[in-house]
Image (cartoon, rainbow over all chains, first blue to last red; front, top):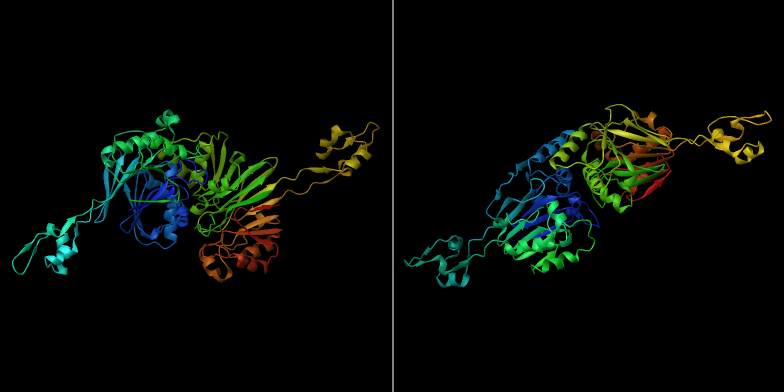
Length: 301
Length: 301
């Protein structure tokens, strides 16, 4: 699972930092989380392919999180997209997009499935063999949702030498991995757990979107491998952060620590800060495995 | 009068070319014509100051001409704008913007005056001492408007030596320029036309927005100093251009010639063309003073 940052600035683009957007690649799929202005250009710039993009998640309807969406949706249609696209967002966005299409007297060349996010509730949005995506409520000035992406664990892992030792034919390997025992011709039953090890748990990535400091969503993000928590302000502006329903880097670190995550990514920096090093320093006092994200960079779990 | 190109690509951003937007500086004011996605970033990049921007003109509601507007409007508010902004656009845009503000539970910190453009009619949009702006209908798949910006001529121009010769006192100079005759103490009347020359006519800039080839708007753009005419396609794609209500570079040149303009700027190039040199070549066969515009460049009248 890889997270690629296309934009991590808050509200206003500045210092060549673009508004929020990130790509998560999981299994062979591409997911887009938030879509600030310029995201389609950022996708081009950083070689992100829209053909594998089937799910777009918009956390809330402040413009810096979705003003790039109309352009991206449009461009994919012009570039020949025919496969359906799933869009998960607060309900008001549906009408905005419909009005834009109407004003342009245009239709998309593919089906756009709009899935409204439930206000104040955690919701399962995507579930398939490879991964699931859930939304969970966070605390912002308007209805806002974080997202949890969880890879499914891959069943049992085969031990080839053991399989040979117990003379299990190759055609039965998948059934062994699915947990079935093998009955040999001589009547001897080979138990699946003798020739397998438990699969590694699937990777978990949690994205908090915009939120003030709160432990309310801790249960949803507990033990994530990677957590992206907004840190709009430094500690000196903690009061402003609280008023504006944002967080500081210290607060992001406190959440990372309380949730027992492995690694913390910081983003959504206010344009008032040119140098982002202090974010790293303030967070590290509380949680050591922390990175100040940089546009264009990828973080692999 | 200066025209600065912020973006001149059609429909899709490509090859580092951004969708349509241009700044016209006239008198000490800044006008923005069209506002494709990324325009606020382009304004930052090319040092264009929004504090002098009081008028934004949107030609039509295909997204590549206005998807950057919500972000720009928003950012100016966040950056402290308090002076009113005038927005001239097709009526459907008003509701789209209102819905976005509602969804964000936001208000701008300045007044946004929305002036709907009249469908199928030429309209005087701005008139002041220094310049005027008119919209005129063009022929596109949806309601679309070109714009004509006309500097006012600066009254009469004084001839200082003649004024001294006729012994006109300095305090009377402005009145002479305003066309008043001067009555000397000795009873002799000095006629204003003896000591002035007619002012130079004000400069005229015409922008066609998106249009197929048509002479219907010629009367509005006649004798412009500078004409920006879309040339989405090369001559080989003339049929596609007609179907899609666009123009070729040759057609742009024909219009420039028929309108007797001084200089032609070409823009709104389809993303299918990487090399734009052929646009220059094809247009030059018909009209010699032609430039293929380049993002970031300014053209002075």
